[in-house]
Length: 213
Image (cartoon, rainbow, N blue to C red; front, top):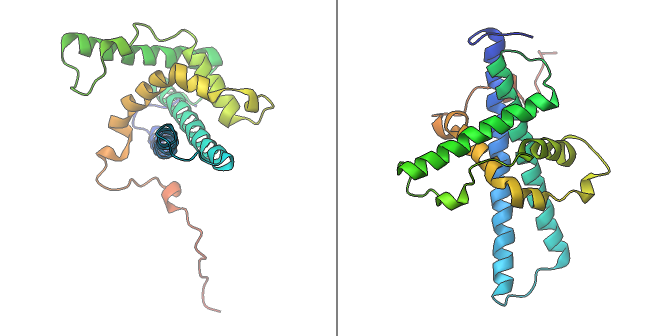
């Protein structure tokens, strides 16, 4: 379906985008919580604390994995929704189109971060230029898509053999740059009150009383 900025479809699409990004943000906060717990446990053990029981270690890993998987899923879906709005068309995107848009967007962000550092206009908390290569890895967008599909989107026999840890180690900086770039406009940081998301925020499990008998 074709649509134009400001029409009814665009308004509904923006509501869905807002919802998707808030889900992404929730997932990232959960990931920070469990990831921090994992790091603190490892540091404590390195300093001589008693090792965490194997069952508890697996539980923390499970919760951290799930939070990061949800983060990837919702960020990827948000990015695709943003591409659809940019194109003004809700039609399904082919894999090559998805990869091209995500790769080019990530490269724009990366180039902007590097230029800000080199020109001295980057914020004081920014990392050193050595943390940012000149180019986003050629396989990033494809791996992002495949990771979203296999660890969260679809049930597949491949899931238990896929290393989300490896993806995190190699590509998290680019995923995080995409996320950070969207936060300024789509997160709750700019909202004075929680947004009205139509039927999403009208949802209720409360029993509605009928008329008098």
